[in-house]
Every structure is written in C-alpha cells, then in structure tokens.
Image 1 (cartoon, rainbow, N blue to C red):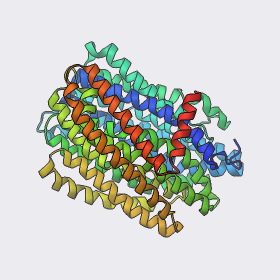
Image 2: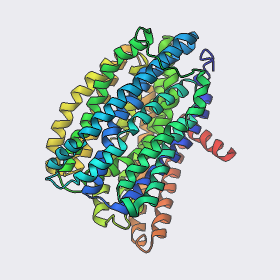
Image 3: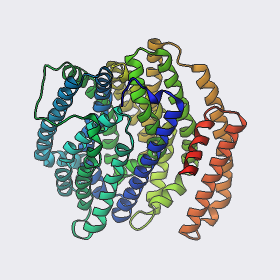
Image 4: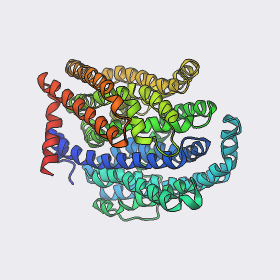
Length: 525
C-alpha cells in the first residue's frame, strides 16, 4: 500500500480497522482466560504455579522489551519512512539486517539463560523461603526460553504488517499461542503435570510466527543472510535501542519487584497477582490495544510529516475513545470483582479462599486501568517523534516511586498493596508525560477531553450505583448453581452496559457514535 494515500486518516477507516482488530484481540483474550482457567483448575495457585509463572516471565521479559516494544517503538517509524520515500533497496537491507541481528542476539541470550536456569531458580527459591519447586522451574524455563527467538521474529513480522496497515493476522497470533497451550495441557497433563504448560508455550510460539509469515510477502522483501552495520536505518535503530531498552527495562523491573514481594508473602501470591492482572487486562488489552494498534502507524506518519494538527487530533481521539470504554469497564470490575473471579476460576483445585484473594487484588488493579491505557498511548506518541529519552527518564524515576509504595502499602494491604502501587505508579507516569508532551506539541485539546470525561464519569457512576444494588439483591440466588451465577452475572453486566450507553446518548456524547457504528458492523457481519 502507498503510504502517501493515508487511508487511516479518516475516522471511518479507523473505525473499520479497529473493529477487525477488536474481534481478533477479543478472541485472543478469551482464549487467554480459558488458558488461565485450565491452569487454575488443574493446578490451583501454589508454589508450583508460581514456578511456571516465573519460568514464563523470564522469556516474556525479553519478548516485551524487544519483540513487542522495541520493534513498535523503533522499527515501525523507520520502516514507515522508507515506505513513504520508496527506498526499496535500503528497506531490504534494513529489514534483513534487523532479522539477522535478532536471530543472533536472542539465540545467544537463550543459550545463556538456559545455562543459568538452576542459579535463577535457586535465587527465586531463597526469596520464597526455599519452597519454590526449583527442579520444575529449571525444566520449564529451559523448555520455554527458546520461544524468545520465535516471538522476537514474530514481533518483527507484526511491525512489518502493521506498517502496511495489515492488522488481522498479527492480532490473531496470540489466540493461536493460547490454543496450543490449552491443547498441550489437555493432552500431556497426566504424563508431565504442569510442565505440559511449558510444552504448549514453545509449540504455540512457533505457530505465533508461522501464522504471520504468508502475509509478510506484502513487503516484497526476500530474506538474505546479511547484516549491514553501515546502513543509516540500522545505525538509527541501534541509537534508539539503548534508551528504549532502559526505559522498558525500568517498567519490567517494577514488575519484577512486585513479583519478588508477592513471592515472599507465601505460596500462590505471584500466581494470584498474575491472574488478577490478566482479568483486568481484558478490556485494556482488547480496546486500548486495538485503538493504539490502528493509530500508531498513523501518528508515526503525522510526526514524520510534522502534521501537528493531525497529531493533536489523533491524541484527543485516542484518549477519549480509551476513556469511553475503560472507565465503565473498570467500574464494573471493581463492583463485580468477586463474582467474576468466582465464575472464571473457582473449580477443582481453585478454592473459595483463592477467589477472595484474587478478587481483592483485582479491585486495585482495576483502579489503575485508565492510567495503564493512557500510558500505552502516551509512550507511542513520544516514540512517533523518535523521542525515547523522555519515557526512559520518567520510567527510571518510577522505579524509586514503586519501591517506596510497595514497601509502604504491603504492610497494610498485603498483596493488594502491590496492585495499588502499580496503579499509582501508572498515574505518576501519565501525569509527568502529559505535562512534557503538552510543552512539546502545544494544546492537546484538554477542554474537549475534560468535557467528555465529565460525561463518562457521570455515566459510569450512575451505572455503578445500579449494578451495585442490583447485584446485592441477586447475590443470594447465585449460589444455587453455576448456571444461575452465569445467568445473573451476565444479566447484570448487560444491564450495566445498557444503562451506561443510554446515559452517554442522553448526554449527547460524540464517542457514542464509535460504539454504535461497531454494533452496526457486528449486525452486518
């Protein structure tokens, strides 16, 4: 596609593509919940599941830093410029160089982590008062560590496809990964136990890449075993890489600190923290990621063209649409946290006490959802200008803030304090980045955003009051059977959504047009 013809610039085009991405991501998130349900049902929350989550966290750490974020932050803007300027030869050299660098670097990293797995396991066990299953951690970490190479290459494929305005296959890739994990547990559980989860991860990571490869042909780039360190774009991506890695490393260091605190609190707390975040991440991952996925190639082009008017309009659109979806979703998660966790996970080895713990954590994760959404889009706006130092400095400062809040809140709120600390750190990051971005690009349409958010908050408050008292009335009937719980909880959610949308129509909100058009497309489909 010729990037001079910016089809994404119109709101109609953004709506069309966002709808497709939302459906694809929704499938991925639902399959992720099923994966977590299977893990919770088969294995409960214990030091065994903590071992799996830590074994997965290590390759995931590198995947998030490199495959997802470095490619998004550094690769897409450079690739988009080459496409626009039609520099085919330079583009081919750039892409092949990046592919081969990824293969070499992450193969070496995987081998090093493979060798050091026992030492890492012993360190984690010491934090957990020598109760973590080190042997299983080592086996699972060594199985999953080579998924790093596959997922990093898959992240690169995603960057290429998104630059060509192709979003469906990349959005479906996590769905395929989750399906392979689910199938692996069902087939191999009796023979390998929780190690079957790790087997599923490595198989799924191969398919995560394979599902995208056929469409990568749109780039018309043939693979060559070549690295050109003199290439201007290769030099540029290396210059951006260090500050991006430090910035994202700071974010992941915060996550690691939270996990260490949770591990020290006793068995299952790391798993409980992860399960809570995955449930909270459902609305965030579906709608915020969909909006950002579609907007980011656009704002990269706007930044390259120095189109400040279009850039500010994209910022306002992204912030308002995220708020319109995330604030009522967070309200519902806070009020209905217990029945949601009970419905999703309370069966087999997952007890009522486990439900209480995860639901308690979910409340505090939900309070920060809107700030997580803002942070996702704010970082992209800085990266579009190839400004990676500002997010780095802010993220670095947040480490000290997170350590202090973790240490203070855990004394009074147990593991829930870690979730609240995470939300407060996100608020801190957002506040600082907004101030800096406003100084750089001028007025961000604050009055329009504040007006919309006033109506969003009022609508969410009305919805929240209704579903709170409605659930209090219905709660006693939900213990009769699983189906009554499903029926009443679904009914309350639908009623809440109806009340919220009705309020926003009554308030004549512009953002409601976005949702109504989505429903029209669903009806047509």
